[in-house]
Structure formats: structure tokens, C-alpha cells
Length: 351
Image (cartoon, rainbow, N blue to C red; front, side):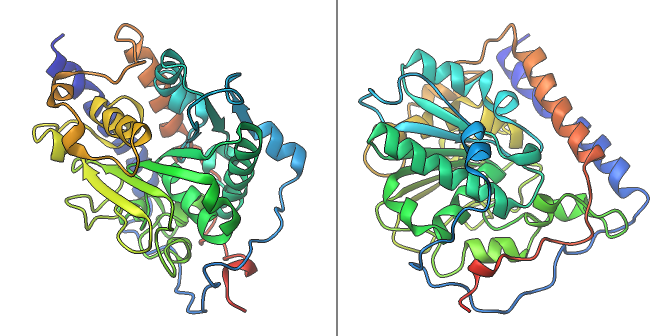
């Protein structure tokens, strides 16, 4: 199979699987509507200390798994945060874990509750704990790397637990739902409802409004937001005004599409950008290896001809990819549903 064919096959598979899942979800219900009503209350001041964590310490400790070299490395520890319907193994074991192992780079992965299908406000507490723990045990800042909801949740954590901001050096997201996605609304038809975290990623959700309130970025943190024009799940994504991109605040920001580096990279879809796309990997590593966010001009155009990022093994890729996709499709169909977005927690508001 040619490199081009190999890169097209996964995109076709994901499209087919999501189409099947969506047909099961939407067929009985007709058109979808926005998830939640507007909450017009004023949000908390930017620098107000965050609340005590509500999740028990043993549960939080169990959720974080790290490599053995986190305490003696010359590199920052990378914290990997998976997305909706997934877990660290399905998202990162067959790609990022291997790539970072080969570089002898320390990393940790946090397991969000219920495959990141539950209230994202609770998931944010897992990220808060992870950043604090890694910073304390490594004595270094943390580089946060997240895919899809795994890009959104750390930003909520940094917004409402300001003590972790100085602990973070780089924030790198792949296809993040930073401002929600109107396509997620289709996963939440009125008759059936959907999982809490999906409501929170719909367009105009209260959760994303809270996350982006005041300012989107913070001083001292470098933000690299990688997205793809051909994302079939996180939309809009046609330019840097799309949902993944960030613009306000005091952080240093780069919003970059796969197609900004490789104009013909039309097969990099939502799952690819966070799991095996070589351009996304190159942009992320450029950010981690330099001061500030990624600078796309530093990424060699030779990555455009590579089928996979380092760590992905061609002979095992079909099986590992299908396993990951099967979990996603199953969760979308079998998810536990609610009829509205979870209420925002009291600490989110000024009063």
C-alpha cells in the first residue's frame, strides 16, 4: 500500500464509523438543538484562588501514571491528557508513549473519569492534581499535551486554579474543542440527550464560556494549538478564527493548521491529529524543544511525506487504530445520557 493510501484509509474508516454512530443517535430524533441555556452570571476574577478538590486524594493518585525518569530528567515532564470516549492507552500508548520513550523524555498520563464522558469540571480536578504532583516531584515545570477535550479541560483547570499556572511551561493541543463545536450538537439530539462532557463541548456551552472568560491565555505559558482543516468533529476549523484557536490574554500563542505546513495534508482528521499525524508531532516537539510556542517555519517540510509520527509502527497500526476507533464508536452509541449540560459549579462565579 502506498503512503498516500495508508493516510487515506484511516480517514475513511473514522468517517464511516462516526457516520454509523451518528445515524444510530440521530435517526430517531430529527434535528439537534443547542445544548444549554445561557448563564449570564459574572464569572470569578482571574486570580481568585481555586477551591479545594472534591475528588478524594487516593482516587486522584490512582489516576496518574508516570515513567520512572520523571524525577531526574533534564527535560520537563510531559502530561498527556486524552479526549472524550477514550483513555490513555487507546489514545497514546501506540504513538506518543513510544515516541517519548525513544527520546528518553519523561511523561505522565492522567486517566479522566468515565472515559472523559462525565462532567468536565470534575475531570479538571484530575488535571489540577496531576500538574501539582508532577511539579512537586520533578522540581520542574510541566508541559501539558492534550487531544480534543484533553486540550479544553486543562484550560479550565488553569482558569479556575490559578496556582497551577506558574507550574506550566508549554500547553500543546491537538484538535481542541476550546470554543465548543457545532458538530457536537448533532451528538446531543433533544430526544436522546448525551453524555455530560459532550453537552459541555457543544457550541455556546456554559462550560466553554466559563473556560474562556476573562482571558484565554496566561502569562508565562506558551500555547501551541494544532488543528486541521479536515477535522470532521471539531468545527469550524477553516482558519485561525476557528474553535481550537486562542487569541486573548497574556500567553504566547501559535495557532497552526496541519495544512499551513503541508497544504496537501487533506487526510489528517480529528483522530489523526492527536494520535499519529507526523506534522502535528513535529509542531509539538518544536514547541517543547524551544522557548515559546511552536514556530512552523522551523518544521522541515520533509514531514509532509511521512505516513506516521515516530512511535507508530506501520505493521501494527491497522489493529491499534481500529481498536482505538472501536472504543470511540462504542462510547458514542452506548453512552449514559443526560438531558442538559451540567450546572456550573459555584466557584466558577464571582458571587
